[in-house]
Each structure stands twice: as structure tokens, then as C-alpha cells.
Length: 513
Image 1: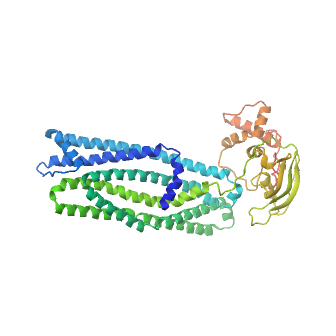
Image 2 (image 1 turned 120 degrees about the vertical axis):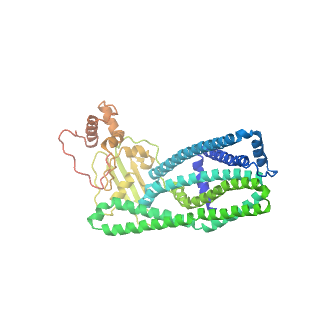
Image 3 (image 1 turned 90 degrees about the vertical axis):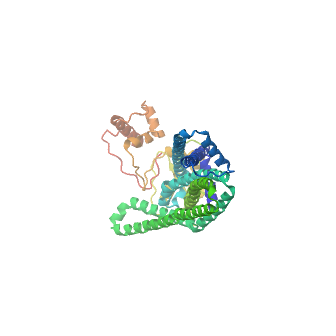
């Protein structure tokens, strides 16, 4: 039942490339057909080598066809034509298998990229209030690890479909050889599969533990990296190492248990299947030795069917183990249970009069005390306004509301007599400059960062005023010219005129428009 839930979550990914899965399945089935044909052709080869062996009359259409092929080939040509046909089938089988592998890898890479892109887009678009309640390490684990495991689950699902179709093909061949024996085999195989399911029933819970342990390790890694200076400043290296080792050991134990339970599928299936094949060989051989050609063909096909059945159980177990990762990714992508800030439609071209807060109140959650309560003030255009107060007074909260990272829970913010909610959010923030106490320095060069800044409206306006085109060749000379333009746009002075940079703004300064 759990597998069906996981498969249902994967279906939207399947619809992205509706032609891919049928093509992969067809290639896989054709590859298996040519493999089965190559195995079947060994029967006339053996008949040629053992010319004095008794041939039993058979009602099997498959055996009759193979014997017809043998009789239609001159005896002098049989020992080179039949091996050549077998080798040709093997070549075609491997060519189809390689095409199946390449197409599967292409499909899996596309889906992995699409999942990562969707998760990152969700991070960029979801309300900031949601991100503040989530652990950064867990979000990083969802983006980096669980998306990959989800694409792996989709690949497993495709392999499961291909293997199931291949199993049907081999089962049909077995039915053509001996339907009573095939029905007996089907019943025994079902009992073997049920036995394996009982042995691996814990795998879903172990998968959940592995996902949670990975998320906790992601938190430890993230906090260790961003807090490295603090850790060293207070001499807490040993303590943090112990915390990291405890979390890492939890991941080790969770994955080890998962591998131990998953690893029981192959040996258990192989032992039970070997017992089944040997039992058939002994019973049928003792009952009627003249039916050895039929038995040989049947065992050839059964030999190839067993790995397929084993893979079906293996894929089912893998899907069960990966279902927690699927849940993690798709629950994060679910939009109905998360807050979003709706952008307004009015474009913002610059502050003309003032920003006004009218009886503004804000709570981070319904249970929290008000961070702001009944705040009313005006911030005039063209003037400097400073907010001064002790820690926790609400200065940063007020800045967050003006930047519209949150919406007030009470009251309204007005911009030039227009509600802030009605303004186009992108154009509002593009006209804003902010120096925050938790500013992030991106891992990028000046050549990578400046083109992003040049595209902002303020710098574009300055370029138009000075009749300068949008830079395309980021040479050293061009970079210096762009830095001078940005200095003029930001501070109103020339960067090469010897003017000193202004002192840093207070951490809770009103953004500059």
C-alpha cells in the first residue's frame, strides 16, 4: 500500500516527458526478448551436437518451432549458422540495452534537475515567515540529498515497470512450453515474494529514520560552517566535534540498518529459487526422462525469469526505503499549506512623498507577543530617518515589514498614498538598498556580481543619462568603469575623485530608495 502512495506522488514527474517511459520500457522488453531468443536457440544447437539423443514429441508450439528451425537448416551448416544467430541476438540485445541505459540516464538527470529547480523556486517564493520556522540544515538536505533520492526512486519505478513487462514476456514463453508447470511455479514464486515482504516489513520505518538522521546531520554541517568563527572564539572545537560525531554516527547506524534489511532480499530469493529449480529438475527427471528437451527449455526460461522476479522484489523494497524522501520533497513542494506573499500590480518608480505606517501591529506567530503594536509614523522622501531603541524593540521587524518580507497582522503601510500590498513586489525591492546586520556575502567574483547590479533600475537610469551602453565585455577597464558608475548611483560621488566612503549605516537604518 505504501508503494502505491509513493508511485502516486511520482506520477507528475512522469507526465513531464510522457514519451520517455514507454520508450524505455519498449527498449527493455525488446532487449529481454532477444536474450530469450538467444537462449532458446541453444536447444537446436544441443540437438545438433547430440544427434543420437532421443527427441520427444511435444505439443509445445515453442519447441515445435525450434525443431522446425533445426530441420530447415542443412546439417553441414547448423554448427555455424545457429551460433551466428545466437551471437546476432546477443549483439542486438546489448545494443537495445545500451540505448535503454542512455535514455534512462538522460531522463533521470532531467528529472533530478527539475526537482532541484522546483525546490529552489519554492525556497525563493514561499513566505519568509515559513523559512524562519524551518531549520536551514533540513532545507539544505531536502534540496541537496532528498531531491536526488526522489529522482532515484523514479528511476527505480521505471525499472520496476520494465522488469514487470519482461517478466510477463518470460511467463508467456513458459506458458507456451508447459502451462501446468508454469502455474505451479507462479504459486511458489508468490509464496517466496510474500516471505520476502514479511522479512523486509521494517524498511519503511528505517527509511524515515535515515531521512531524519540526514536532516539532523545537515543542520550540524550548516551550523558548523556558518558558526566556525564563534566556535573558535569560545574554544568549543571539542564540544562541536562531539556533537557532530554523535549525529554522524546516527546516520551511520540508520543507513547500516537499512542496508542490512535491504540486503536480505538477494540471498533469500536466490536460495529459495535454487531450491525450486532443483526440485523441478529432480521430480520431472525422475518422472519422464524423454521430456528432457522440454524440461531443458523450461529451465532455461525459468533461469532468466528468476532474476526478474528477484529484481521486482528488490525494486519494491527500494521504493519503500525511498518513500520517505519522496514524501519529504513533495510535502515541501506542496503549496496549499504554506504562506505566500501576493505581489501587487502597481509598478513602483521611486518614492515621491513618504512611507506611512498607520496603526501597524505584527506577530510572528499567533501565540507570540506582538513584536510591533499600534505603530504609526511617516518616513519622508529625501530625508534620513533613524530608528533608535534597545534590542527587541522592533526595529528589525519594522524594516522587514517595509521590505515586505512580512505583511502586518494589523494596520496598513502606505507608499505615496498607495497600500504597500498593491505595489509590484519586484519593482518595489529593485528600488531599495539595504545594509542588514545579517548580510550574506555570495561566493562570486566582481565580474559575476556587477552584471546583476547593473540591471537594477537605478543603475540603468544612470547609464541612460550618461549615454553609456549596457556593458557586455567584462574587461578590467570595463569593470573599473562599472564600479565608478555604481559609486555614483549609490553615494552620489565619483569613486576616483579621492572622496572617502561614507561610514556604515546603522543595522536598523531605513532602506534607501
